[in-house]
Amino acid sequence: MFKILDKIVGFINQSIAAIGITAGIAVAFTNVVARYVFDASFVWASELSIYLFLWSAFFAAAYCFKKDAHIAVTIILDIVPTQIAKVMLILSYVITLGFLAAVSYYGYEYLLLVIELDERSIDLWDMPMWIIYLVVPISFALGAYRVLERLITTIKTPHEECVQISEAEHVLAEISKNKNVEANPNVKDLEKMVKDVEKKTGGML
Image 1 (cartoon, rainbow, N blue to C red):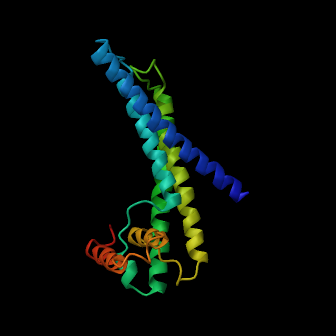
Image 2: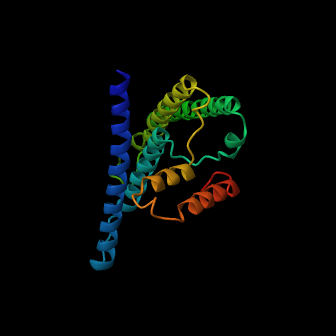
Image 3: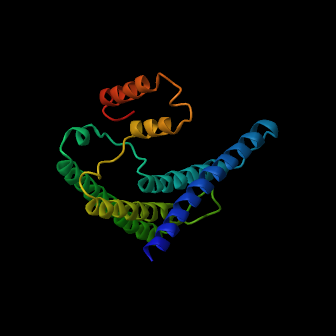
């Protein structure tokens, strides 16, 4: 059941993120062409493109929790014992989960207020604004679900293996897959350089 739910959540996040950015670019491009080529513009295009980009960004952010693609400074995790690193990871996930759940809940509360006030968009064909604001409770709830997944996984994982792989280590892994690695005498120098840069940038390479 959890595997099915995982696929559904992933499909929702990816689909809305992709459709939102694609449709937003299409609407903005169409409006620019209409304005400069035909000397006309769509009144609703600007507002619609903003909302499409907004939905895309929020759901893409929720998807990033699945891929652990959000920016993270890992320098402290790299220098402390793995037992402490695991505790720190669990604590960070708990705090993140609480924040996302709170925003989702209060976003829902605000949604009810918008429905009660019957707030509507002037440019988007009198569309009820609660449809636009629906992105907040849904995307943050999906993000909270993803963080909960990572929290459970971290708790079950031995402390020796739970420290997150940094982006620099991902780069090194890709280097190691290169067929010309053995033939390239500069690979070890490159690996050392990447590790040194990661230390100097606090794990934000």
